Length: 511
Image (cartoon, rainbow, N blue to C red; front, side):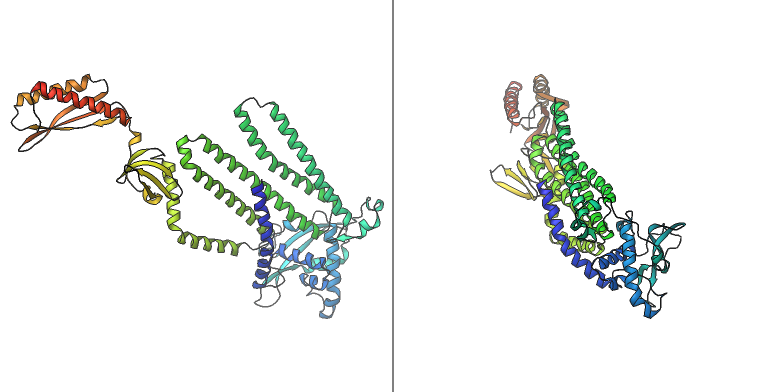
């Protein structure tokens, strides 16, 4: 939780930089008033109205049907009336508007029109619409409130938003406003938040208390951990949904609904990210406990790195989703991250190669910590497999550190994986020994091997494999039925002593 809140605060600290970047992006676009898409245009209109700058707000209305001399006087008045209309419509939500420069093609048969609200009117309803226009030849296209909407503004009366509660409240709670919303409405929303926080804390404690009564095994305890980790984010998500319903009853102004909607979007995405992070955390922790103890020593650092990487990835995706829905242009930022990622990857390609080499060794696990073998000509015992290198304790008792990228490409002969050990000596018999004695020796050695309880032989365990000027080479090929090298040395010694006795009994001498 604490780690997640730290990242959440980092997101909040990044917002001022994003605001600056958005302002720069707006200036870099074709329209300095940020009218490039329906949501941006309506948002900028409401922000101008909230600041009381109705002359600026009038520039979001298509007033070209009015005479030039009338626009300066009528424009601010029409903007003020339109703000009141939007404030009175509790179903109007700026965040539902399209962020595409082409608008939403599904809400109208005319692709240049965008419906933002449907209002009651005498004899029916009226659609408030934006229209995509070009203010000058060859200039950038912008979204303005359509001429039909501007013409209908005087005939559209704002809905009565006066609440029966207001008549019973002190006057200052009604007269004092913040973001065009009476202070009592903000207090009501704050009370709703506090009630939901207290209520869902009680629900969480009650749920966990009920679950604890059924806790009879370690398996059930594991399920309880999963339930608790998923319960908290889903309660936050449910609280956000219920708060959105309560907001419609309070009915703050349109600009307030915009900021509240952004906050709710942040909470919803945060809840989903929190849930995913908990799932990843529990899954990888569970995976770590299920691994073989020796393998867990090797993979712990990799699992920890994967856990951190997954959390950062979820956090970054959540941040992009939130900022994109808030209206910030994330295309440039994502492209910059991509270029920066390529530069980092090129600069750290050796380190990345070693990390992926370590991942491949852990995934394929040809060796584990404690295994003895021949690793690309280096004989020794694996002491550690880290993020960058694998350390091998050699027969000289020195430690050799091998980069994981090289270690993964070596021929790895793991002696610890043997199920039996080869017994394969070669006897050099004196040249001139009679054939009968040699054949008798072969039969005697085969009998010796067959009768030994710790030896396994094949069809031809003893064979003549070479001839030189001084000796005849005789090879013995058998397996000792042990994977313990110390036990093998005992069996090997016994076999050599038995072979010596057999040679003496047959009358054969070695070179």
